[in-house]
Image (cartoon, rainbow, N blue to C red):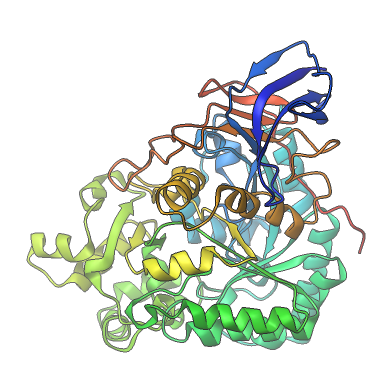
Length: 538
């Protein structure tokens, strides 16, 4: 054998009890598992003494924003050091394929706060297949740090076919969108994402979304919506997505499935009851969450959708006009903008986590209200100035979560883990560097919300099943040797809100296809990641 991991606690991803065994790896796959006392121990050219460390399938990040980071950073320890061996990107309806020259420029501006402006990236692709090929090529043909699967972004598709207008798609435009979705699925995408509080995706009607989901269903993919509200009207927004996908016959995966803001405190059981009813009636539903309270997005995302119609430059023009800016303030502070989930914005909860323009660094780490008090001005004036001077590139933490909801939702049987990790900014959300050890350390070991075996299943086999991956997500003979070795007694997130880029502890080894990407707690130079493509024919 190439390698034997000796004397490990195997937590195989099924949710079953752990057991002690030797795990032999050969040619990138798990070749033999020999439980303690079950016969001759396998031998290998290399032996890793686990000494009781847990060995589990590599973790699958079901909601990642590493679309450009994977091409920018061959190290990518933000995910590799957590034990993540596969990320699902193309999230929230906004990413970089399929595009043409016009829409690529627009989406680069629209999500600068998520991924940077891309000035350091050679955008050599336009189609989904070309983007996946670029991931496969990676750095000098060697690949990328971890594996990646791609969701076709519905907002980007609408941007390409319709533009930024707040109107129904014409019949020919809808047909073009359906063709783009079908082509992306044929080229390897695993499903379709939406950002229904982000423009231009939010301009799509339920009828339009249903038609796109019918295409996704025909290819056995899944629909992953960031739905229309996580605040006021959150439960209705969940109901809308369940009904829409049931009508389309499409699998549903609810992105970062939270119930935020004060008006939803303690209401997670209502969401879970809704899902249980749908599941009992035969719906195919899963969801992901991150184990933290604040959310993270761009400052511009909080604006009302009418202020964003026409695209990024139109937003800046409206913000520059005094009368229009005052209308925007009224909606945001008094009425509740759809971009802020129908809840009036509380500037004391909006912390600037990053800026694109370095002279604005003084805003980072402070709430908008704190910066406004320091300038002796109204918070909206501070926010408006920042939006204009940073050209919509500022990212925020929005402190709006409810701990009891977070705990209740992560216990549900269809739950999976997703970091929603935005890697940009001077002080990014710690979930980008800490989600998976935070589950294992805080919510398993410290709080006992989940058993270790159950939590590992949430982070491995369940997401692999959603992605229809036949040889990942379990420690089983014949499966790919995407493995993580960790210490259940010490594993913990190192990242904090004060030091968000600190790497985790207690995860000494991570392998992809049997190759060490993390060895003895250090990142190797191995680039074993590739695109993971939908394989079932439509």
